[in-house]
Image (cartoon, rainbow over all chains, first blue to last red; front, side, top):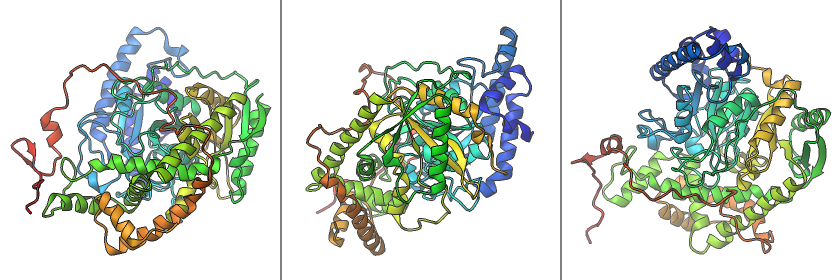
Length: 500
Length: 97
């Protein structure tokens, strides 16, 4: 049954509709692979086999009905059209998105026994499309981290090299898809948490425009930055997941009324006249030379496919790191105030109310979460607010303006996702600033709210994947996905899988 | 840019975090190093633009204010740490003098 797990999502969807195999058979193949590889990989916090098989049976029922009612399905070679692309497809969900009646930990001991009271809108929409949920994937605690080492439930290993991190914070989702435990997974990207693990694990990862996908039912970290995104093995697969969950949700006032067009990925569209900007600020001293050369080679491939490449400048790129690490912790310090030991999670016994708060939070939050709460509390505190939080918001406006000005000249911006390939577990030990510096290339897109798509463009000498990202104007996920698809039609990087 | 131990203790108090002495020392050193690295922000000229509160391409999009059912009480209470008479039980809010 292992062969079933080697297909792309689009191929799997077409095979399910043809009846080559059932969703139950497929789900069983995924669950068997999870059982075999999880001890070494640890991609999941919670696996939900019974739920998955029940959803698979329901999907098989709908598929049988569809076959009975539909015209010959041989014409559905490429996914089968809108609305059907996910029926019976197993996916994994990052453990910060709520699924009703299933434990949701956010990677934290403060939520170790929390059972979600409702389902996140993004997940609900995928369920309506007929997905099968295999389980909840490992994450840095409250999505705060770049390696998944900050999870209270253990470290996830990179399937390309088990001694290395899968990236983070959506490291469990990335490891699961790269190891072919699932054809796609949901992640969240606040400062790069979909794109960086996608790059480290050789996947295609989409961070949509801010406000494109509802945050209702997502355990909040940085509310002005959080985006629900997809990790998959190709741009075509990521497009299917993205279009199924995007769009206005009355439960999230930041979601937008802009219609989500069905993204029709065209195999034959050349990149004629696509203007690609290359920001000089993203090719910095100290980056791994193999990353730079793979990204530059990929840019040449885009050019060979018809794109017009030109240098651009995003002058405030270096400021994105301090701006992000003031704004996100400030928002986190407010969002995480709700974890007080009164309404959910364990309560640390103490004499008075204040000590219940202090002891529960002090005992149950991990080191990085406490560090960010402290940093954010400081940046918002009397006497320091304007110098830190206020100034960060003002510089954020400049970063946003950088993108507006650049994207008036070019259609998309191409850049590396990370300065290096996947680093070793424990490499950044107790040096938080070194870990923050891993995010320098992914933070600006979140601060500007623009969509960004990471995809594989090569390997380093150790055989570790290298990623490139395309960033584009608000709402133009379709352009990024189409360009990456054309690139993937001409290259083989995304087809490589780790030997696990 | 260097924080003092008493500043760190004050921040921990504001954030309602009980820290051990070791943690206080460690956060003092780490937060000082992080803020030192971030001082470059103070030099950026921001006079040309108003501040940006978000990356959202549009403002917020409010739904109509109509009553609708909320979540069920039993579901909300099922993972509470202490429940009595279908309510959250909490330690006394007002402390004795």
